[in-house]
Length: 304
Image (cartoon, rainbow, N blue to C red; front, side, top):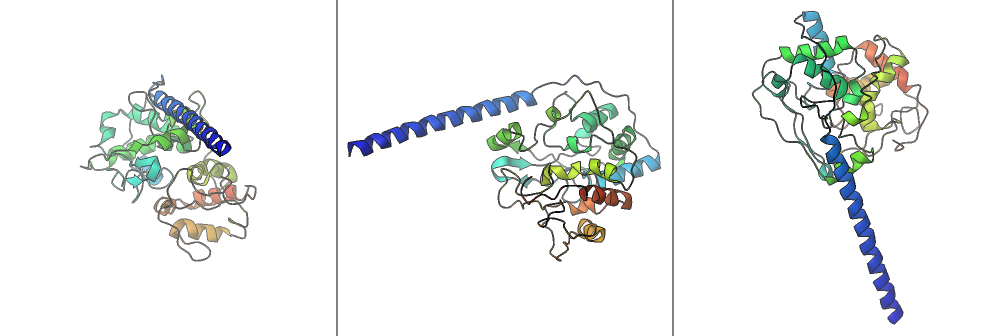
């Protein structure tokens, strides 16, 4: 009986020690997260002035409603750029894109500061944006960045409040463990920008476009549950040519999926998949993305 009591006592002490170590780990990671978000980046503001050229604005509208995914129903900033719908991410927190119309936060930014956000993920005060997937689109050339900010300046002002975005402890820890990107600017090489080639239906151009998919489908594009997300958030699908992914698919199958949200089996995708954005990709962009996905090694589902 004494042995059992001693054993239980030892187990209890070990559990306390483990809990203390875990608590210290969480505290350190959260502190590192907060300190990183408080960092001020010394990045020059580019000399950029919005364009009123209808061709440039039309290009910006296309990018905002497709690759950038800013202005769509259910998107980050909503179809009028007046702010997105809050997304409850369970233990991660609540995410919601702000009002970036001419009556929103963008009104406080110069054209150059908007361009800096798109290339570097740095806000007006020099600190990092949160969650905004700049690392997925900062390969856009200066002409496309100009087109985006010119379009944003051209839309009607939306009189809408900014809903709060809050990140809980788990999101902070996952960010520091590179399982979730919240602190955007520290993921970007501010001294070297890789720019995509001119749009073409090639795997090389598709390689850049595919960055737009990696946030949900993982760096290996094999999908699986996003770390830390609740069961209400669906697990992204496998985009590699594996049997659990796109093996046996044709371009037409892929095109139908992207434009209608309907899988080859006829099953509809969960609304979490931003079909409203991908359906606006033009033919060149769609072929480029498909060409790149076909070059990926077949990887089983879940090996993100």
